[in-house]
Image (cartoon, rainbow, N blue to C red):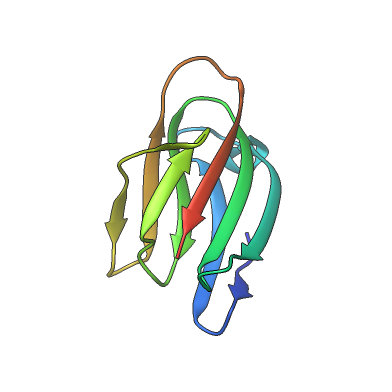
Length: 98
């Protein structure tokens, strides 16, 4: 796992499915854009189901899975951000908006 810096202040690293031996195998793609409102949007193409984790030094404003806003948990002490991926092991589009 390696951390990338997005913008001036967002450090971010995908971990993948936390209960999976090869957790990083759940991360297929990672990209970042800055929208017209100057928000940083980090997009992950993920697969599988379970607790999906990333490291972030900043709490995101929103998290979306397949374009639907989802609840997430964020621990500011260690930067662990988790979201629950339910259902089948299909490919999903996960977005974190900072």
